[in-house]
Image (tube, rainbow, N blue to C red):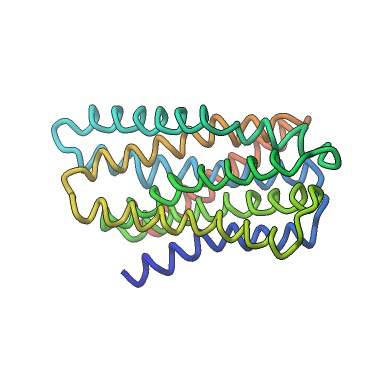
Length: 250
């Protein structure tokens, strides 16, 4: 339980850490941001496949493959429904942030809310990983999510400051987006611990949410500013590093 708590704080704290970097580097080049986000996407892709999808099949027994496929699509559909309530991150992270001098506070707060809502299923994914009892795989998943949270935290700062939000309140908003992820981690952990029978589906569901975020949010954003080749290699680098880590830790 102590390890789960520390990991939850680490996953949520990664967003806060990214926000601190955002205060230092208020104007990041798209190339730098795309490379970092692509690397994080590769890490998350490996974590989703190795730490969630494959274990879901293994724990599912006779009907493991069916349960896993159903869980993946259920997770994706869940985030699809969320996206109907809040705008896509890559739509706001593009033109609106580039023209942040003309952005209004409501639009910026909507952007921050979108990040916070997307953080909940990511936190659940980390918690479900620990609920499986495989600590090394759980840490792999949590590490991938935490790495992805750093650039997310970075992009929160500039538009909020430009919209006239005071630095103190801006930092509090960044902290709150991280707290959402901490809450999600505990929801995932306790849900699986209480009902271990749902573990295969829960693992696949969490994997589906991560795959959805990678495909629908992260990859389009990193390929929208003319740095597609570098972004692709950064994704491959992130994936391979996590693959190597999984083999060495396994």
